[in-house]
Each structure stands twice: as structure tokens, then as C-alpha cells.
Length: 112
Length: 112
Image: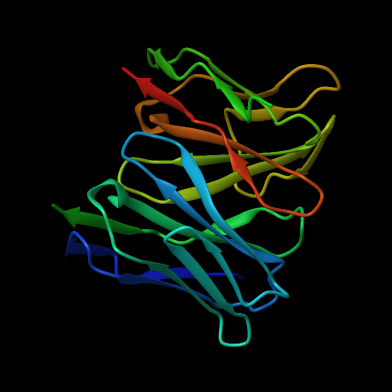
């Protein structure tokens, strides 16, 4: 049974810092890994999707890496801004159509 | 493409009433997933449907909850005889063939 964990559970940093969010999964047989952002009381916004054959994906100030063999992914946020404050979730499906299993999320607060 | 559309955004029901939540997937997506997010908790899978078929309902409570995705029209998540513990945000997602999920903005159900 797939289990997804995220560390840290919460993070507070001053504006401008670079930061790393961690995601671990127990079953390396994943189809892809997706990072989402959720603002309070809102839906989920997809940030990055990494296919199982890929090592990393980049979008603007965000970079996500994937190490399937060790069951880990990291989300790197460069030059953090107050607008980055949100909960960040990683999610993995077993196959292209399988349900995704979500991690519990990392709650990020960027202080101006 | 309007994305995944969920309605209503907010729904208030009295205990014992029925709640009907609707989800229209992205154009071209024939796979729909429902997730529930209880207050202060993570996202939990409920059910996965394709057109006219339930593929995986392993996360669905055995009683009072049902889901359908008819040939025509949106997917419906139906909760009969709602109780206070059903108060949550219900998210719908759809997926294309190569994976990657797009989520709707959710329906926030409040049972009073």
C-alpha cells in the first residue's frame, strides 16, 4: 500500500530565501509524481508533473526532482515571495489512470 | 477549455437532507476522480469513474454515498441523509491518457 509523507509539515521563512520541500513515497512503482499548491479555502493548482522516466521539471522559480529508486521527490522554490504562502502537496498514482495518493502537505509561510 | 467545473461552490444542507455535487471534467477527459478533504485533514480518495462505470470505489463510505458518471452530463456525487461529519470540501479531478490530474475548485459542504 502506497504511503506518502512530506517533511516538514510547516515552514516559515523570510522573503527571498530559497527553500526545499520534501516528499517520500513507499512504493517506487509510480507512473508520475505531481506537485500541487492549495491556498486556504481554495482548490488545487498543479505546479509540476514529473513522469517516472524523468529526473526533474522546472517552471519559473520552481524545480522538482524525482528519485524513484529511493522514493523521494523535492520541490525547490527559489527566491521565495509572500505570494508563495500556501500548502504544497505531492501526489503519486500507480498507473496513468490510477487514483493519486496525496501526502499530508507542507504549509509554507513566507514572511515579508 | 474551462477546466474541471464543479458546482455548487458552496452547499448548505440540514441533517437528513440529500446533497448532490456535480463535476464536469475537462474536455476530452473521460476519467473522473472524487476526493474529500475534511477540516484540517489531507485529501482522501473516494471514487474513480469512467463514463457509465465505477472503476474503483474503495474510498467511498459504504452507506449513504453514491457516485455516477452517465454517458451524457456531469459526474454526480450523491450523499443521502447527510450528517455533520459529512461537512468537508469535495474535490473532483479529471485526467487525460498520459496522466496528470486537473482539479476543480471544489464544493464546500456544510451540514447544519
